[in-house]
Image: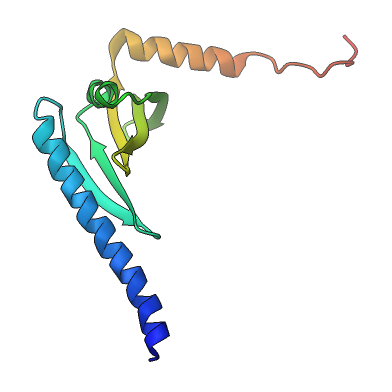
Length: 142
């Protein structure tokens, strides 16, 4: 292998190692600096080009909101449902926030189940929207 080829190959490995190191340091710093914030799991990682990333999973959406508020990130939320073999439709909210902290990409994730009246209200609204007639295009005859 030529010195030039060896240098190019090693540059990619060096970037990967540096990103992994930075990500690990950031994960430790966040955990030590914010012991009051909930963490269910933290996944350090990196992508090509040496970009470091951390995925922090919290117990629920409240945990995502706490972390996001601490770092000035906005939270996105989506409510969905799924049915397992027992024919009971489970309804849940998935929350996510993304941003950068000191050059490391941060993704915050959490979910919560909707139960009782909140679940029933969401299902009723979804079913009402599904049953509504589709809007007609402009210019259609009435």
